[in-house]
Amino acid sequence: MPTRRSPPPGAPRPPLDEQLRAALAALQAEARPGELAGMAHFGLRGDGRLGVAVPVLRRLGRQIGRDHALAQALWDTAIPDAQILAAYVAEPTQFTAAQMDAWTRGMASWDVCDQACSNAFARCPALAWERVPVWAAQQAEGAEFVRRAAFALLAALAVHDRAAPDERFLATLPLIEAAASDERNFVRKAVNWALRQIGKRNATLLGPAITCAERLRERRDSRSARWIAADALRELRPRLDGARLA
Image (cartoon, rainbow, N blue to C red; front, side, top):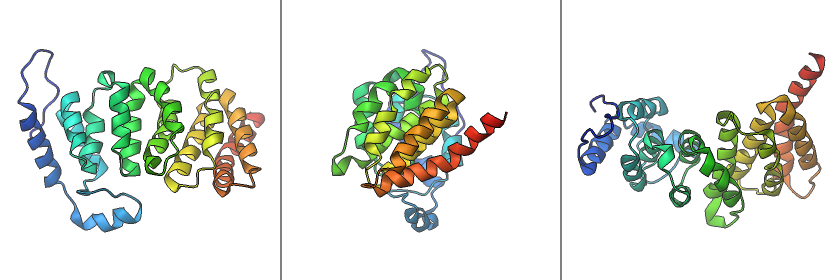
């Protein structure tokens, strides 16, 4: 696929269907069918997966540039590799809440979820913060990746939204506690990720994150909550001890 950047405003683009065909051809050229079985072992599934390596997807995203219409067309293919590429070429400021909701409902793998949250949704913080509690409340059996998206997005916001006040993150700790008893593997790992990232964000949030984890550790009714607590405390407590010694 030829290297190109987003054209200047007003410059003509090829028709969308032509752009989509070129992008899919570029993905197909980088397919690694021999890697699919190994990827599936780590939960990287989804119909039509090509096995394209993430560094290659990032490179293709840079070559294409930001193009929200193409991102939506790529997402609509439901091919996991194309959906990850969609996250790289989406224009975050052009998302709507309805479109974000639709993307989460179309997720069938944790890597697609995490890439969309980190590289697309988190870069539109005004909308992203609104979606976190909405998705966190989704407990239906078929909404595993919707709920994961809430906490993957929260983890991404803890890294990327440098302007967000500490109070905004403190207000999400009850969401973490409420979801910690969800025994689904992809949900609990995202809850753990969010808690750790909040605690690592700064010294002000470290203590409340540890306190939250300590409460989860006492949840004898939930193995998931205790696992989240143990893993988070393993990473966060040394930071607190180091801050005390400094």
